[in-house]
Image (cartoon, rainbow, N blue to C red):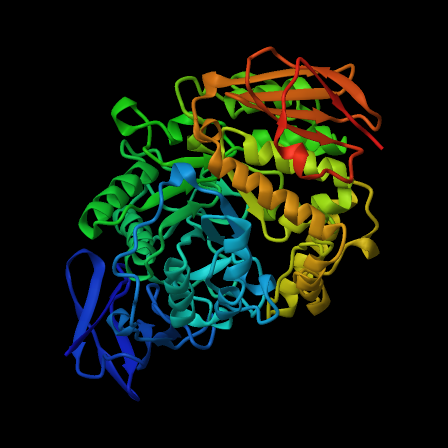
Length: 578
């Protein structure tokens, strides 16, 4: 006999339609309904009716073969033939993360297509593959942050088995897998949760939709819904770490914050499985309590993204000052980010019009991820321009050098390693024409404030917007892509081979710079990263610290030979331009 159950505390009657028949569920304590039936077995479709209203998909549906709408399909996770029994992920502190979007990473646009590219990731030297969200969302194509069936991998990507095959293949090749999950909101189409119970609240306002109810009446089961979802990915799909999207939009006034509870549960799951599992947060708050240990009042999350490092690096390299880049742009900002992870640790933020952030004192660099690009910072631009469309080859090399020698865990966005010419644009596939029009017009209004003409904004609903964002793998053998790829590979190899670059202690990071002359020297033990941001050659004073290895990168230097990555240091280095 199999079990069918659902939480629907407000319903007076719940029925399930399964195997061509409809049967009534028995009411249980705490708003649960359940029924045992021999029809509940792997591969059988079913749907719920609440007080006669339906059909509705299961809020915890593990398989949505027809997309966001009912029916759901039963899935027996025990049937998948895993081969990773002895797998243990490497320490997160040593991670080199590669973020990718399943739908645009390969020609196939599936998990199996990603699997075919694992040799490239291995030759690059990355250790962790981070997947943008894969929970079922509206249509076939999208970023995944509007998921509505949080337990069911998107069928267009290969569904449950496709994701499991990818994770199993990654583990067989020594690659850990990080999955991006969204617990701050759900998508606008196919979101049936409110029909079942108090999953959402009007007490808080989310910029992307109704806020999830983590602290109001009925929130105990909502919290369990989210924690069980995390356990599903970590246990049933063998995912090694979860990246928690925009936790600043998770509102919880409980004494035990949902993030702290999630960290506790993840730690307990790691102990039970005998395999370490990790949590990584994205936050706009510059609040180090996220990653401080619970014993000292933190939430115990393992790491978080450092947007300040990205903003400081991007703003200086590009000269952009619009939006939040208004708060950045100097070498002093970049220097502070390299030594503290955050630029704003309580200072006044002109962009926000208030003080922002808190000191990271006492935290190691390995609690933060640093990057020049990610899906947000590329895709949320009007035309989805990558750094390769905004920077010269020399500045791309500087950006790569600083990301891969910084004291943080480095993250690369797919195609960044070779300076991909393809953009990464915002794309959707909403089947509701009214919603598609609303998304299209909203996008145009958003960027009209920055002076863009409506006709120049790519239509998110257009197939070509999605297709244009697909990586062009033939570029790897072409110049200047091949040279940048080689540079990135050698930087990753240097990071792995030099012990000083694995030292996450921020008090051992030293930075010298000149705003006037446009140079910066990052020193980490014997490693010196000498950056010339000017278009001409100049002499850069180096600290006298004995034997060292100097890594030279110049904004005007399109050709850097092998010696540039292991040049014996002198008291003064000449950084050439062209």
